[in-house]
Amino acid sequence: MEYILECKALTKRYESNLALDAVDLRLAPGRIIGLLGPNGSGKTTLIKLANGLLTPTAGEILIDGQKPCAQTKAIVSYLPERNALPEWMRVKQVIDFYADFYADFRRDAANAMVAQLGLEPTQRIKTMSKGTKEKLQLILVMSRKAKLYLLDEPIGGVDPAARDYILRTILSNYSEDATVLISTHLIADVEQVLDEVIFLRNGRIELHESVDAIRDERGKSVDALFREVFRVDGRSND
Amino acid sequence: MGWTFREDLPIYSQLVDEMTRAIVSGAYAPGERLPTVRDLALDAGVNPNTVQRALSELERSALVYTQRTAGRFVTEDRAVIAQAREQMAANKINEFLHEMDGLGFTREQIGALLAAQPKKDN
Image (cartoon, rainbow over all chains, first blue to last red):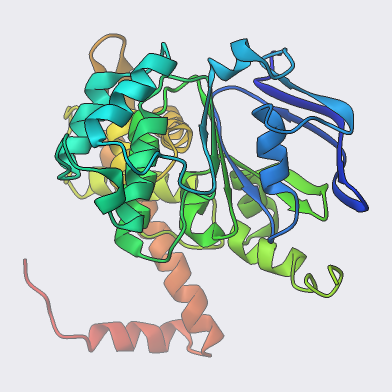
C-alpha cells in the first residue's frame, strides 16, 4: 500500500517545548481526514512539517514517499491558518499568480467559483471582508488538482452559512483519489464529511480511527468522543 | 447543507435508511436513475465514500442495481420493494412496542389505544 503521507517517529521540539513527540502516522489516498485536537496539540506543526515549512528535530515525514521538496510541493495544496494573499493584489492577479506557480491549477474552476461568490476580477483583496478573503483563499487552494490537500483550520468562525460554503467547496472540488486533511477544533461542524479522524494531544496521537468504526463500536459521535477524551485538558498545559 | 443525522449511529447506515425510505415511499420510482455519488454526497452534506458504502449496501439488498456505464438505478422488481417496505414497517412496529412495553402497557391495552385513534383516510 502506498501512503500519501507517512510519519516515522516524527519529532519537533521548539526549545524546551515538545510540539510533536515521536508521531507514527500513515494516511491512505482517497480519504477525507480530520486532524483534531485542542490549541497547542501540534496540528499546525504537523501540517507545516508536511509542507517543508519546518524541519523535523528527529524522525521523518514523507509525502507520496518523498521528503518535502519541490516535487512534493507540486502535489500538495496548502491552506494556511492565516490569510496569506497579498493585500494589494486584485482577484484576477491572484488567479494568475496561482496559475503561474502551480501546473495543476484549474483556472476555469477558480473563475467559476469567484464569479459565483459575486467577486469582480478587478476587486482588490484589501477591500474584502475577512470572511470573503477566507473563501477566496479556499477557492484558490481547492482549484488545484492536488494529491494531498492540507487545510489548516478552514472553518474559522461560527457562521453556519459560511461553514456550509466551505464544506461544499471542499466536497465538490477534491478529486476522488486525493486525500484531504482538515485540521479543526470544531468537530461537530465537519464530522459528517470525514472518513477518519486523528486525535492529537500534547504532540501525540491519541486515536486514529474511521468515523464509522467510532459510531459503530462506541455508539457515539466523534464530537461526543472528543469531548470525553479531552475533558480534562487545559489543566495539563500550564 | 445536508440532511440531519443522529449521533449514535454510523452515517452510512442512516443514509441506507433514508434512501430505503425514499424508494419504498416512491420518492424514487422503480427503475429511476439515482443521482451520482458526488451529487448525493453534496446533497446530504457527507463524504462521497460514505455514500458509496450506503449504495453498496442497497445493492446487496437488491433495492438498487448498477448498469456499468449508465449509473445506478432503483430496482424494477416491485416484490423486492414491497418486501423492504414490510421490513421497514416491522422495524417501526418493534420500536413502538418496545417503547410501549417500557411504559407498562399490555398488548391488549395497546390494541385498544390504536383502535381508538381517529381514522385517517387516503
